[in-house]
Image (tube, rainbow, N blue to C red):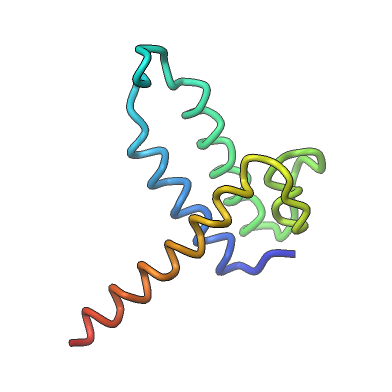
Length: 96
């Protein structure tokens, strides 16, 4: 099971990803499906944080939460580590 901190960090990373995702990709196709997927993951993370369980036992977030990551969220685990390092650097820099 993931911790509350990991859930909050993943939600931040996904929100940053959603905010930076352009309306269309480099090929000129809509990113609507990707936006909807990211938004759905964020909603699921909010649900987990509030109720300490996932609503959909077959969802990608549920598998990630159970540490059975074999889907697209595996890539976000790498981003979580990088995001944590970035937060730590900002904390140190602000302390100076």
